[in-house]
Length: 106
Image (cartoon, rainbow, N blue to C red; front, side, top):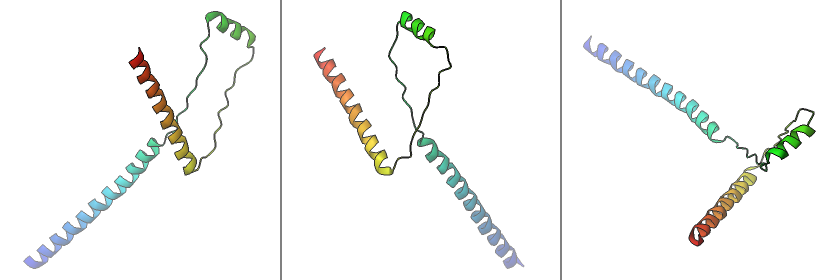
């Protein structure tokens, strides 16, 4: 009788551990996918020339229709993505070097 209770208890303990491990694995899989998806968010940089008040008023006066902005993109291959990342990294390095030179000179 005592042996049967121990056996039942051990089986229940093993089953509970297996269910808990499975639940944790499923939760981890779903949260990891969301974290990776949020890290791959594309960014857009919009730049424009600063206008004086007179230029703004003249521009607004000539516009009589609603303005539309068209944004288009294409899916890039991994090689294109890597090349773009390297180009951005190189550009940031150049800006940092120019700023460092300016600080040294000024």
